[in-house]
Image (cartoon, rainbow, N blue to C red):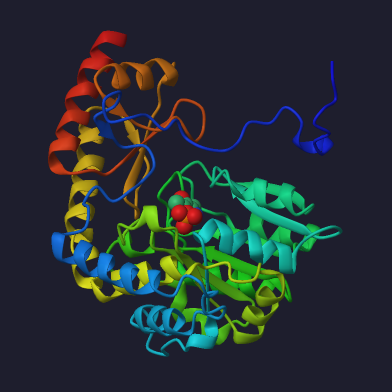
Length: 367
Ligand SMILES: *Cc1c(COP(=O)(O)O)cnc(C)c1O
């Protein structure tokens, strides 16, 4: 066997990350990557197009490397989640929050350092560690997918991780982290960073606060967000974080020059001007999620409580067969999480009706 191309040993034989991406013909009901099912209105599309046209006239020049206008707009948006407000120097952005977190590990982890999370959780985290030559340690979540603080504290004291990655709400389980858990973990971390990944933060249930509120109290806390989910802008690729300004400065050292294109900046700024519309369906999606949880439980499934725009349910003896039976009926969900579980993203009422019908038929067929 040829050893060409001479890939790094630890990458040999690995497949690139990603859910199956099928066409609308193959799978008309796409509920597998937690997208917002509602596209932008014609007014929003027109505003984005005009902003891109204005940016196009300047494309002979490199974009604003520090994306000052976008940072200010993101700070104003995030500041609404905290009585302390957020200043632009606390904000950083990149092409999706995946890139933001990779940059965090490039700056703050790497050889000789450790990153830690608790499974089941987002499957990209170990990839950031692998790609930055960071030692990867994974603890476990409880039966109900909550985090046991004693277990977390023990692992943190044993491994002294440079970075802990914790989504809240967690993907794929939907579990949110209580504030006192975040505060307690920040304390045990010492100088290590606690990254609370709030990709689904806007979907949290009433009364569940954002970790953004805790930033002034913990200089080692980082909160990441994305425009890909609630903001209905997955195609634009814009993720961001809020943290101590000194911590942001460290990321500026590792970022590639001009990593955020002028087009991306223009699109994100235009979308932020339409915040009210783009986030306007979040309440509908939350209600649809709660109804989906209720319906699945009525059918006798086990269902994880969810603060996100997806629901993890099971437990199937052969989840692959159920996944395939749903797909045979045009409904694409995600085969992810612990053995026997499936994850469904929350779509429009019509899409969820298709999901319910398909699942009813699929499970009747199986039993
Ligand atoms: C979807 C998701 C992200 C965000 O991805 P982008 O790169 O911003 O599109 C981050 N974290 C988790 C846990 C996610 O599920």
